[in-house]
Length: 183
Image (cartoon, rainbow, N blue to C red):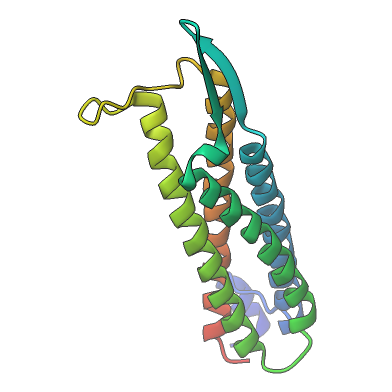
């Protein structure tokens, strides 16, 4: 098929280097986004605390009172660091060695980070749900009516963390696609 026929069919001949540059630019943008959003989730959770009185009884809500929230904080912090490391690997790795192996390594790294953040976000969301709605069967009362500022910060942190999951899902799909291609 000549170039006119390829253009007529909607296919354009791109140089392999142009596609690789676009892929690397996409990786860089997504990894910077994941880093920034994970840092935001970490900072929001780390600064979520509030004290109030409820009928003369002091109530203090702080992320460190819940093991699930602490796990969430550390998981997002780890995701931030690994996102930066993987950003470095994208820059270094695209010029060296087997590109297929490098993309597969990034795929595995991204998969591990996504699993870590997903587990932490799920655990923290479950505790957050109890904070908002309570659990009548176990006698746990909702607290978000009394510590709204705390709950809003925690909710914003959850939203950021789920955005990190979405970005990592895209990165996993891209890395899996590239690792399956022969170079």
